[in-house]
Length: 390
Picture: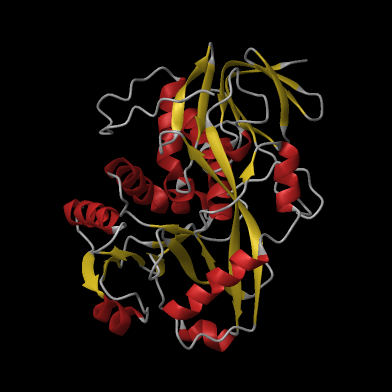
């Protein structure tokens, strides 16, 4: 017998999970199709997702006011999600966003400094000496930085995912922990053969949205195979760096920024510093390419370059071991999420542009508005989040 729901949300990641929760808490019957994390990343064929991670930077400051607004609204809801779910999502370590005041990146620095100064309870703006003496980070000369001491730090994607799924179910949503393999109108078939019927379907499948065939048209997305690197710390070194904030900065001579997380305890019980921010990486165009990339350790040469910059910003760092790993980042044609009608009874909700983890709750709420036919007018965003189709 086919089960019927008002809404079917395909994808339980940083946008899909919140979308299902917001719909369910509004009183709708909801099916959330959310495949579990791969048991063995080395052999799994996916689906893979950004929410299978221990830590992502969260902050209010951004180079665009709409991204900042989405972050502010999500961060403001973290505590409510934690209280109601019992899962700790937000870790208040502080967040630094830094950039050069001269050269090709100076415009981006001026933009995020302007946005920071306009925020309620604006963060401190610091020079390199203040960052070094106060926060222990050695930034390039000529850098200016914002420091969000109380509303920045890192968030736990796995905890966010679990909290969103749990609260969606508490509100009456039904969770189907397996992939969707096909869609026919507003009917969706799961890998086990179960068929679900919905009044409306939201496709929120992240890096797979352009290749999984679940949308009636192909969204114009670029999925990049990115490398991240890790430094494993001793307990003593982790304690020494315990007050370190999350940081985004532009290394000297670089034309793009990098990001680094403070010491975070990963599922293996050890403490790691994580660094990323590569831009010169291969494209991923198919599910097979995605699986091949996630079966490997990333690009060792890129990992070495990242770890060298980690050492420069944290002189004196002592690591027990280092390694690299695979990541995938989805960039939309507009630089903003696609939250749009994709066809009769279909909404697309994808395109995190590297920022979906910290502000996914707000993006999911906007996806719920779109799915229910509610206009974005009055929401305070300059963008309409329209999709671009290939």
